[in-house]
Length: 217
Length: 217
Image 1 (cartoon, rainbow over the protein chains, first blue to last red):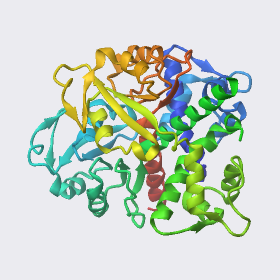
Image 2 (image 1 turned 180 degrees about the horizontal axis):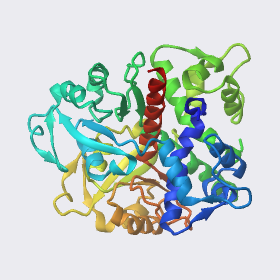
Image 3 (image 1 turned 90 degrees about the horizontal axis):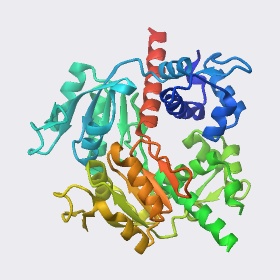
Image 4 (image 1 turned 180 degrees about the vertical axis):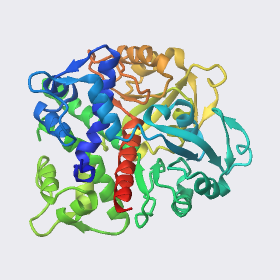
């Protein structure tokens, strides 16, 4: 399997497939066709078949996909069975929201430490983790060979934190700072979360609906 | 402009184009070619030209796009100049993170009210808004003709809140609950934020890198 030959668009669709399949499994559905998936997900059946064919043969013509097999397979492709370690840098509102509500285990990550700079936060327990002194996270990361860091620090600290993370040997950063971290010359894989992309899509669809309504009046 | 004929994939790319163009403008770049954009964004030049052609003619062969014109145009398409009103339902950690850090104004939204159910939160001021009693947000929404609600409530409240929002005449919901709201029979446009999609992409790229490294050893 030549993973790195696969188009980024296919990769980005895999988590969506997984959510859809999880939902089917939850509802007790054991088999699904590419056309049924396409209808539900707003994709064509042939696109879905093409996407899955990048990773081998999952289905059988005219018979559909086995939901559980496909889920497991996509989960493995996405690295969910790797059991990676994660630390969170920045225990503000967003950091706490993730620590309290996001199911890291489900996606193959174990949250092993949380760091913050605020003296009144360091040493307190937040969702089962005692917050560590954020002025010295590098030692922890290199000693424990941590895989990823979740960056929920203020924008003004983003560059310096990213640089330190890279120097400490972090492999990936899940970046919530909405800032280009400026470490593209390193080997660190950065995944940026941009809330605005999603709000702007909503904004677009609202405009479409308004135009439609005006057209009917 | 037949907005609703445009593929969902094109729409989803528009906010990314906008971010890239904002970045160019910030750096003082006034003109960009589709091939330069493609290189930076991991798309082909022809895909970019095709995307933009859905909305009319922006560029000139061999001359590139004017960064400011293109930014304005994409912003208008995405409805950023509409000045819509938003309320936030759920002033927990995630709600506060958005209230404190997300630049609603920049994207054409005005955050006009925040609601919560917790007695010790109601009446307190959070980032300039006095939190209102969340047991009765419907009146506010219909009286003020609010456009969108940002749902940052616990999962267990997601269905009931969504139903009330729909009944109160909300037009769109920005849903952070990670739950299918079950109001697909209404006219409400729901935009779901799935943090896991992004983490799983990071997970995938980590796996690729590990495979590469193993290959070299």
